[in-house]
Length: 492
Ligand code: HEM
Ligand SMILES: *[C@@H]1O[C@H](CO)[C@@H](O)[C@H](O)[C@H]1NC(C)=O
Ligand SMILES: *[C@@H]1O[C@H](CO)[C@@H](O)[C@H](O)[C@H]1NC(C)=O
Image (cartoon, rainbow, N blue to C red; front, side, top):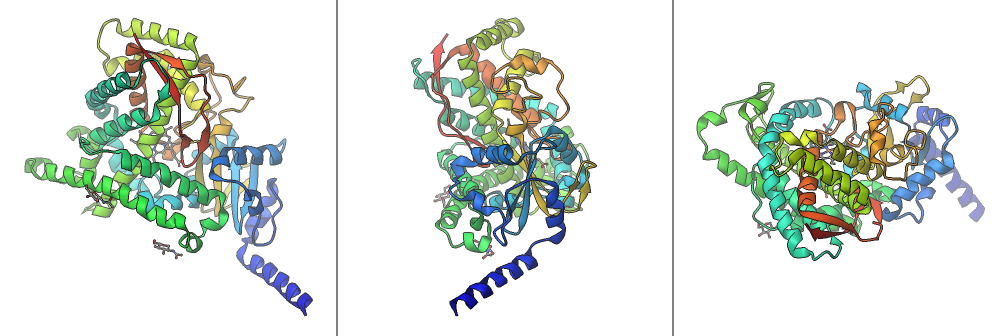
């Protein structure tokens, strides 16, 4: 009798698997190497014992175990869904430049509750329309106007560092992240933060853990199961805090605009209105129309949530790790000091002079290579694409492991060493794309570089940065994650 039940159960599993798995993907997946697919669970057993902390290791391990001589594409079935991992710059080029590959992967929906379907996640016509109206607000000329705000926030930051330090190394994340967030909100949202931001910042951090855990515990990827977990209840609490923070920003700015003259409030849906009127992101969202209709409150909220989220954590990581690397390499610090002396002398830093800091640019690039703030980006194809070398299956997620691509020893000699000068040589296209590339590249790239450069120059003019001797422990959640990065500051 028992035997009968076992047989029936096994038959049932196979039938269910047969119904759920896409036959075409099954066939195409044979082009790539990967863990053995079991009925129904696929290769999910690979995630057993893996926690959010181990994500870097997990991806590295997948490449190490399953890459073939021919190519670095690894496939894994997560339940009945196909996922691919890639880190080869030629494939990265093929994906990022193909107009059929511009939708984001289904895992990004884990963040839906937190930031909605804003520019980072949306697709199709919605993404296209939004990108068109938002792009002018990140134009060079607009950034130039923001420069005073960056400078003001930097002065505040330097005061804080002075009170924190007497040369002893301390964790720089809290002060930098707060400074970056304040500058972002005051520039892009036109709103000066008065209230404390620590609750918001902490909530962003914790949401990262919730999302990363869903990635490594495949059963949590199913909404109906995730909804039963304590993580879900925690997420609900965190989302309330996030929304509370951004709603207030929108309300305040709206009030301010209401009191402005009516001539500023005309409908403005012309290509470069952001530029002409010199409006910040939030003003454009509040005042523009798409197909004759103004954006709804939810539309505006999801973009403000998205930009606040996408902009502050990435930039903070970049600044903190750059300081860490400068502290660790005294010869680099010396060269930077020399560059500052040569470009500025005793003059004040200006927006125009930022472009003259060529060596600093190499240092930032090399830091972004070793510690990319967005270590993995991800796409989903909705139709099959023939890349020549192989046929890319539709309805599969493509995880592009930038952190692994940036340490490819065939492109970057001694990839684990910090050598800023390596960027003086020409690299293969798409071998180094910390801000992604193609149509879905980072809209905040210039903003970020301006912020990073300004911070580093201002700090180095005041302090000598000193290494702590402790290597940071890095993890990957949504972005690069590091709880503590110790750097010492000696007043000059
Ligand atoms: C060092 C800092 C930064 C890095 C390394 C970075 C990196 C990236 C990457 C890799 C993407 C592509 C994501 C994907 O394909 O899923 C992206 C997209 C995006 N980034 Fe950044 N970013 C940075 C700073 C910023 C800043 C300062 C802002 C806003 C002020 C911003 C806003 C966005 C937005 C809105 C997108 C989505 C663009 C679209 O799909 O049209 N980022 N970023
Ligand atoms: C999970 O919960 C969210 C709201 O908290 C709800 O919108 C969604 O429909 C639920 N999903 C399932 C499959 O129960
Ligand atoms: C939202 O913010 C207001 C103050 O701005 C506060 O009184 C309220 O408790 C907050 N709500 C949540 C859920 O944090």
